[in-house]
Image (cartoon, rainbow, N blue to C red; front, side, top):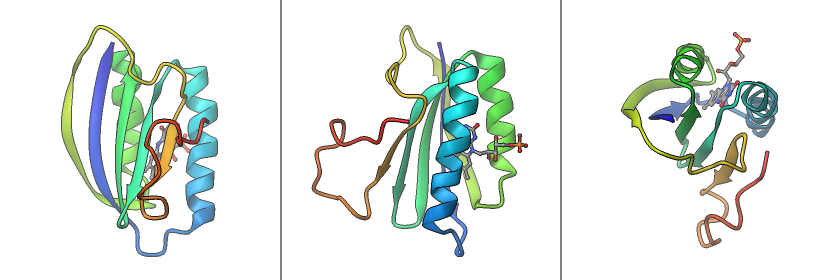
Length: 111
Ligand SMILES: Cc1cc2nc3c(=O)[nH]c(=O)nc-3n(C[C@H](O)[C@H](O)[C@H](O)COP(=O)(O)O)c2cc1C
């Protein structure tokens, strides 16, 4: 199982609808391509973990990097691991700006 982690800065004009649209795309593509992971949003920044087959993860990351809805995409790490951490989520989403005190895992949006 291959894992990739990056962070990025949301574009200044990013809207709530943009985030919903990203999640909609992710839900469809990721479930069809055996990708799982989580997307965090905090203080106008994203952090995302993608897990799946190496080639699929890398080509998705290449598309994500070019997405105008964020900038300053920085790769934080890649590697292999024995199992998925987010096996049940095509892309778990958490907005930490609005629910800082909520327990993290139980409050994930399941997409
Ligand atoms: C922060 C962020 C995270 C994204 N995560 C995913 C994802 O997990 N899966 C996905 O298919 N698209 C994701 N996207 C959307 C892709 O950047 C892109 O719009 C999508 O792959 C469709 O690309 P295409 O129109 O070139 O096929 C994300 C975009 C952003 C800005």
